[in-house]
Length: 239
Image (cartoon, rainbow, N blue to C red; front, side, top):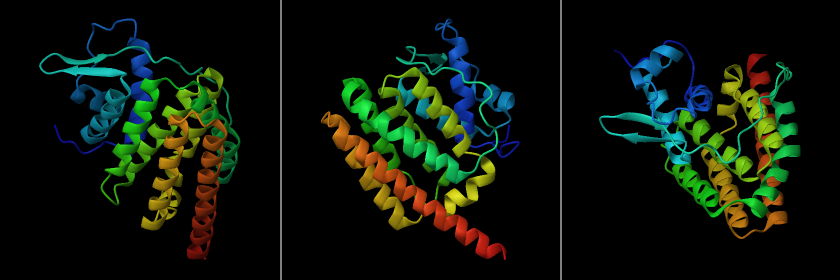
């Protein structure tokens, strides 16, 4: 079977679908998940995207693999997000950034106060995975960057806020906006974002809640400005 995806679904979208599957199968931990080939067929996605999504879930401790036996659901997440219905389906990237700026500094503050040692270790591992991404691999960047921010949101220990984070992040990753997200990334900006992420990890690890919130806010404001410039560039190019 070819690994070419049947549609434009990316690794982040595959990860969302696998998270839903894991929640449904948590009551049957001894029953393996479908094989990679079956998951590809079920979700209409390439094997590369499935493998990348499974890598994130394994790093998070949601699944474990045994050669010759399959992939199994691991311990349940310490905090499960609420399923929020009827959220606005139409938005734009600037509205998404405004929402993130309001929500995520608070999540970073709570994470610094509440994160377990295991959660802090996970956040550090996800940062390392981001730092090892091949330059120009936008699919990988979005996958691990989203996982990093979600790990901070989960470490905050608030189900409602985690559900809001997931809803906002799903809107942020709208495929039709992907070209703008790519335009907003330059090597210099990515280096700056890495510096922001390192500061976040340092403050959360040190239980410095106010500093963690400030670092997250600075990071998101920088992202917002980059997106504004990308949108302006896109509008000028279309004229």
